[in-house]
Amino acid sequence: MKTAGRGNWSIAVHGGAGSMERATTDPAQDRTARAGLSAALEAAIAILQTGGHALDAVEAAVRVLEDDTQFNAGRGSVFTAEGRIECDAAIMEGNNRMAGAVAGVRSTRNPIVLARAVMEQSPHVFLAGSGADGFARAFGIEAASPDWFETPERRRQLEELLADPEAPFDLGMKYGTVGAVARDTSGHVAAATSTGGLTGKKWGRVGDSPIIGAGTYADDRAGAISCTGAGEYFIRLSVAHEIAARTRLGVEDMQAATNALIDELSILGGKGGVIFAPAIGTAGWAFNTPGMYRGRADSSGLRQVAIYADE
Ligand code: ASP
Image 1 (cartoon, rainbow, N blue to C red):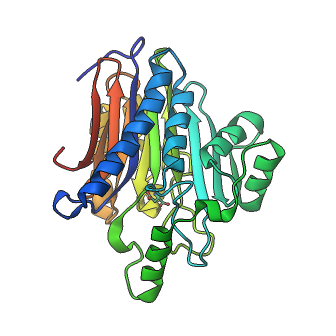
Image 2: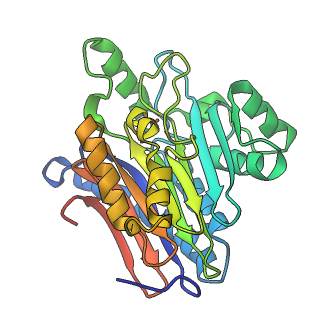
Image 3: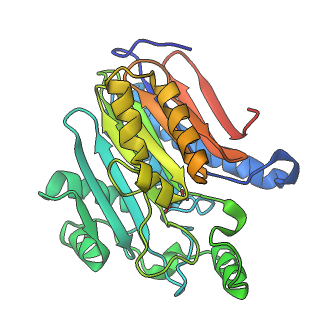
């Protein structure tokens, strides 16, 4: 479905890519995941259909997903090997390519709100660790105690991982990172991504999500991109920026560029998925895992929420 750029809006959200298959997914989990994605879409739609900004829409959608314990971002994030929660997030607007990112945040309720504050209220792009939480406190951004982020299911997943030190690092192959990409009625695009990273991560490991150009990118001349998956591969390929560059330079349209990067990821052995909102046309995605929690909507009336590859 094609819609022109200016005057129309388009949005996509994701809640992570992974090994979700229809036959093995608990129906209740299927329902609650879809409801969570719909709630995020609705928050963004309310902004976009009244002429609001893509930046506000992606922030709103990601906040909903961060507060939803089903997804690995904000509340409900996975645990590090030391039993802590360290969140990463990034936001970018395509108009002037302003960007803000944070890594290893431990006491800020919505890391995406902090990433936006870094973008708008500091001269910097990327803050990490206690300094990032300190910036949040200095700028009055809502705090949360470490136990607010914790859920029994994530604790169980860490214990399962620690019980089998020989297990592959990405046990279960479920990446629950959340993200949103949008184009507003003025033709501006924005991207936002937020994650707890990988269960059992150590040594201050940071994935692609908060790295501008790897897991998150936005450029009005091309579109907006948010990624999920094995972050190390997305960093090595600069996936988000390369999709934007190929589109901007007219090598391919954004769907073809996204497909090409997923193919390249597959060749290297990486798993994951991408959502995009192009400067012209409707938002879409590609992934090489059995499923990806995802949804999209646009001003022509499109409303779609999906989990499995065949949807
Ligand atoms: N990409 C994230 C990371 O590597 C993980 C995810 O997508 O769930 O930190």
